[in-house]
Image 1 (spheres, rainbow, N blue to C red):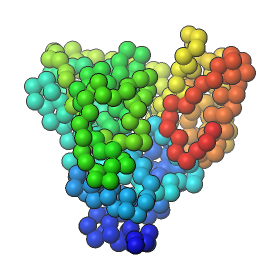
Image 2: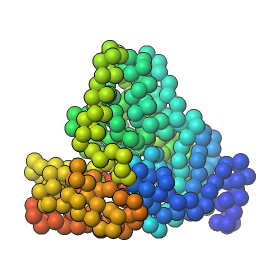
Image 3: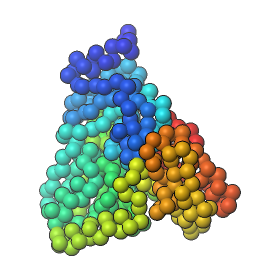
Length: 308
Ligand SMILES: Cc1cc2nc3c(=O)[nH]c(=O)nc-3n(C[C@H](O)[C@H](O)[C@H](O)COP(=O)(O)OP(=O)(O)OC[C@H]3O[C@@H](n4cnc5c(N)ncnc54)[C@H](O)[C@@H]3O)c2cc1C
């Protein structure tokens, strides 16, 4: 019979460095979130399989995070094991038009590497500050492009697979939709392969500079934020940002969390906002938008340990 106390010892026996009570705020762009019971950086597939199998043996819940740019973590933290991939998961291999990226590679880095090889297709996504894994799970994108468009396949492990077997899923086997992939909480993405097009390197570089400039004009960059907090509603033709602005909520605050003056769908942690502050602002926005427009807006960010 396995005892929970032995989980740490077993992990350490494999030479894997594990932390306990690690504050998650510092792994998120919102700088919000309490401690993870266990936290581990995993640098290769062997380590990952060992960690997963032990977590199954000890019945420990798993949360994989990327760059933490789309998560809001409860002040109570996460009562399980948080896994952050690095090492071999942070490498890119380019072979002609095929680009295979580890899931821990930052999306802007991937796009830059592709541009260096005169490969285009992903430039519109430049400036999305997520990892490739997080971008695939969220089907990150803009008005004109999503990350899944150039995808060929991913390699992943199903979290509840006791054998922790690596499987390949082709793009057409994944249920991509608006900011969703159906992979949420079920899979750990290890790598993603993209098919890109040859293009003029200078043109591509020019485009990523323009894209970044556009973002800096419309978004409150340099603050603690998580990008757009709410998905755009299916009903009507107004974005969530427009709806929130029309409710007069720019600048609305609770504690240290406030609605950006620059982009109404951004909620900013001024300095010491708690998750509670943040959630209060979210709830108020949802209530006001529903009262005024009879539209229920839904969060785009992933809520960890929070019920709205
Ligand atoms: C300033 C700013 C601008 C932004 N602009 C955009 C934008 O234009 N378009 C857009 O779509 N998003 C935008 N975002 C949101 C965010 O950057 C994207 O959703 C991004 O893809 C999230 O990636 P991440 O690595 O940070 O994921 P995280 O926030 O770490 O995680 C998000 C989800 O993915 C899961 N996950 C992460 N990595 C893995 C993995 N390897 N395997 C399995 N699951 C995993 C997590 O469990 C979680 O459910 C913006 C955010 C900020 C801060």
